[in-house]
Every structure is written in structure tokens, then in C-alpha cells.
Image 1 (cartoon, rainbow, N blue to C red):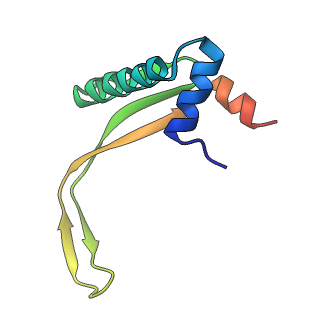
Image 2: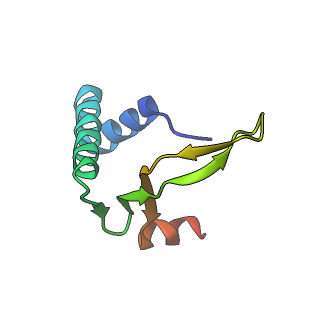
Amino acid sequence: MSVNRTELIAAIAERTDLTKAQADAAIAAFQEVVIESLSKGEPVKITGLLSIERVARAARTGRNPRTGEEIKIPAGFGVKVSAGSTLKKAIAK
């Protein structure tokens, strides 16, 4: 089972005595901060939970799976998410 945004908002609102609208605003603000930080190349670290960082991907040669033709994939950026120690311990049970 996965938790979608609506379920996450409801759970946060219930645990923090916030309204659902306030919880939604908090999640939206968190999302904006993460995007802004990663866009600037700055990592986001929530000690114990996770760290998110932008990583560079080098240009490379790939293959079109339909035709087998070689294609050039330009350099770009990706996102790396790493679990923190508290999260790792919680899922190991």
C-alpha cells in the first residue's frame, strides 16, 4: 500500500492539530524548498530521515530499443535520495 498526497495531508493534519488546508500548505512549502535548493545545486538533508541531492550525469551513448540504432544522450542532472539512519532502522524491523 502506498500513501498518496491526500492521505499524507490527512495524517499530518490529524497528528499536528492543523487543518487539512494548513497541512497541504506545509507540504507545498516543503516541496518548493526542496525544488529551489536542488535547482541551486544545494543538497537537502533531514537528519535521520533522508538526504536529497542533485547529481550530474555525463553524456553517453545509448541504444534505441526498437531499432538498435545508437543515440547520443546529452549530459544532464538527476536526483539521488538516500535513507537516513532512523529510516533504515525503522524499515529493518
